Length: 582
Image 1: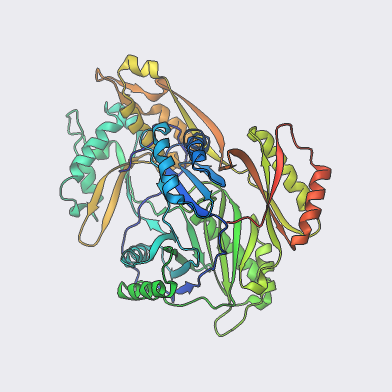
Image 2 (image 1 turned 30 degrees about the vertical axis):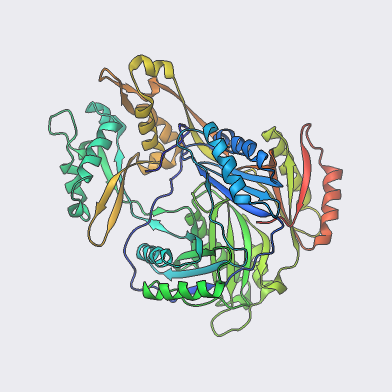
């Protein structure tokens, strides 16, 4: 298990989990998505990622992003941009050409380590080549088929030289959850620590007999205190069909698994492609058809109140209807991949970004590009940022208005007004302010009362982690399967913040004298909304407004409209990024 940040802000969200399983034998024909050629970067770019599971976006910004930005300033970067979101900070450092960018950034990160929360360690993203990204996808008619497909894919790519990073969308997990009943725990005089210790001790031995017989595990795990207490008395087992942080769909009939493969800098793309295909065939992954050059690829952003996988399925239903209204698109093949803004790593609510690709129907050589763009434009809650391919379909321009200011609420109001004004300007295809929020359960510790009752922060952290993201206690293994086991609250309490707050209040923790104390005697529990993401550039917080134009010449009209109609609050200012990098 990775160390966690010393913070107890809880999100009513599902944490990212590992994917394991068996392979489907009835997968439909797969497809391969062609590479995207990126422009020559002006600066040497280094990406820094920092995990802090359990922290809200505001905590991530305050305790991680800002200290790292201050440390990086000594390295002399041209620009530092950052995304702070629940559980993760991502910083993009642009260093002048000719400098040893990675070494300079690594040096400053080492200097910043002492100012970061305990257990938090920044990691440099792999150094990837600028020339291309290989994109593959494969389909199955059942979600269970994604398990073995994903495992075979990762095993195949692990041995390919020249692969710097992979990003998989559409993964599913069948992890095992021992879900706690706080009231029954208290009635038996037990706390979360007792269940975690008992279950982890049992899973330290042979576990293969529990793969298909969970009731035996419930009765085999004895709990402390005597009286023949068993795990099944205080917890139930769930085998949730968990969705990883990035959702994918290919047509409305299929479940999809997609992967982006980023070669290392200097790698021969064709050699990497050939080796990837060879390994996929060897592992029977079955991804070997290339998307035709006439296919359309679009970068999109979508509002969503569900997980990325749920949003991908909703997209599938709506997009099939949009395609049906365009007669020339009958029979086309398409795919979507969606993940949280700034990364495809964890499932958060609010805004998702990703790509949609549409290829001609079988036996057709060309795609009606204008009809495909109209179908995308008709999608509810979706904005096309830019067309990535083919060249003849690109057109238009994508700009970002940055409303800068330290007063977040004032900047958010101004950004919404900018988006409203811009939407009415001729030549604007869409405008969207990044003001989405995510639900949060905040827990404030009464450390004086904890000390009086002899409750340690370690035991409190374990109890809160079980509520927020689950405590990993072991693995059930057999020859063909393995399941990761977590102790946590039930699905309803994890996904409904009011239910989580009520369950938290009923949970207990044991003090030094052996007495149990309910959490509502030791903490203050609050319900709140937090920003889905916090954006910064060169030390300045901002709220972004994405603007899609029919042509680059429309930017002047947009600027004039904003200057004439939007009164910016004191302490805020407006800046424009023309065709910013993704």
